[in-house]
Length: 410
Image (cartoon, rainbow, N blue to C red; front, side, top):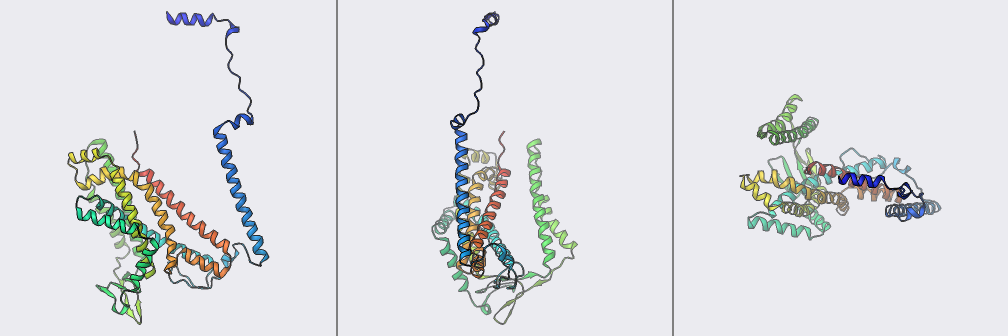
């Protein structure tokens, strides 16, 4: 009845009294100017344009000034002979090689010390962060003291301290000997190394693949448990993958067992693999310093997990290992990963402090190239581009991992 009355009232309204739909006004600058989004975009474009224009002006002005002084510009110098030696490199290098190869050696040295330091800082930081929350007073206090000491001491001071300590170790003739396989002296750490390293490179590759397969098995068993309620013990399957596949690869490639042992000759050791005092000092300075920050990040991430969920997990009989692996860490990673990414980027950039102890990383070698070539602006630009690329790559990888560990909301 009511609907009929409303319908009748609407149809009885004269055509002249009906309100016409509003007309769309033509698009004008005045209308756009009152749009907050448009103004924000316009301001950003103007600022970016001003910054780029200023940069081009300064670069052009510097090039004109250098040309007046007879200083060459451009990146053509990279194909010229470097003319200086580098004490430590992952690839073959000679003073007759080009500047490009010198830069490649520098980048690889930076990546080497950064990657090893990231692994060491992560493992140590996680352990100390968990120990910081231990109910054992002694363990908790030791972890707290470690964090306070390393966080409140300048990193450069720490690197110089470790370098001084390493160089004060015994002479190679009185080196600390561990089973004739490992020697520690003021020349660094010298260890035995497989004679046929190519085989072990393939074994290492299959080990990484096997670890990925083991992770897939864990995800599959967990998904099956959630779907069907049936629990499948994947421990022995994972042990078989992680150990069995690399072992089969080793047997398939001839099962080499020969090792090159370090032998003392003259004033130093020959054979095996050596880690220089500069590398060890920088490794310790970077990893131990960043580990203190990661420990605090891990502690805050664990404490961010709701206390009620931890009590609920304990009430159903979960052990400490399952409590951390299935309840605490999956939720804590959402808090841990973003600030940990910033620490990894900071560690990579701080590797430039190796110049203080003579480690041939990017900043150190770039200074030498700048001095010998005279192309200051180009060298600084290359160094900045390399550090920026490493930082962006680290951020992208960690962002992908962060999305992978995020708990999917329903």
